[in-house]
Image (cartoon, rainbow, N blue to C red; front, side, top):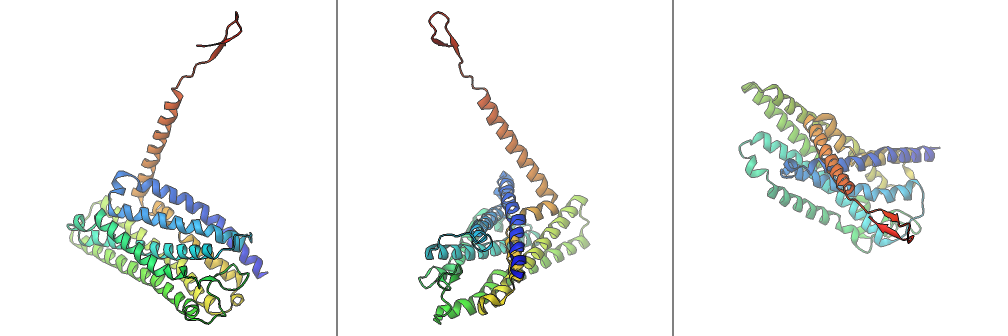
Length: 327
């Protein structure tokens, strides 16, 4: 019974989150491809965050087919290492890109006169490269030859549980704790600190200067957006990280399939909701999205009209000779 419930949670959770996630990522790329946003450091960070989340969702398709639908997939050690590396790389990259976005907002609020020199595309690109390099180094240990399948005939990737080697002990005991700290706990703490810094600075400014209604509304929307992102990140990722610690340290069958399905669905949702949170909390985001959709619609209409103006000659029948004549 528990297996059926757990599988149902994974199945319906996947279909309710991943398709919406891909749609949201496409819409996010449309929005941040606008000239004003893509030239800012924040827009560039959001573009890379969207690509990283999309990479994770793309890899999750194989996991869904293998562990939920129970389809027979290719058993390859190289594919197993590649899949695990991409998952680890994308999770770390997405988490620390969220940190950079929070720091970007914090700097813009605390140092409004220096943001033009600090929050630039060049600085953002350097930080993005640094994050990607660190994520690659952090996840590169899964590319070694000892990393394959945990047991013969198993679909679970990892070193052999029975080997007792140094790497096996590291992977099942130390690696989950490192993931919890570096991928989830530290990013959550830094984002909370940034939110508190932004909130306190805005409250202090309100005691000195009476802001306009429009500016006050935008500041309130930014605070709602930041706290919503932090809450969703914590709810979706921390349970999965704790589950991974107990899952890798204990026997495979000692954890309820219901818990496995629930935390896996929450983890997948973490890489699906960014666009929808922005649409719900930010009026400026919604307006930019509508403007970009109008531009895409106008461009498509022009392309269709350009093709429609092409006139092709129609053949007519020559009654005398019976041969077609092209007019």
